Image (cartoon, rainbow, N blue to C red; front, side, top):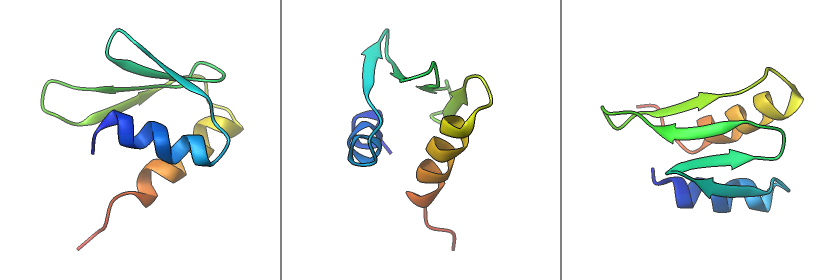
Length: 64
């Protein structure tokens, strides 16, 4: 998944985000970025928004 797609998904849920240095930074400091192995890494202070963003991120993937 591309970070710009994730920005659109979260934008529809009311989150505002900005790209900074290749990372996607949300309202209260939650950060999504790509790791060297192409994984998405999520960092930030544990908060209600952190868990809401994580849930929306997980919804974008299908488990087979």
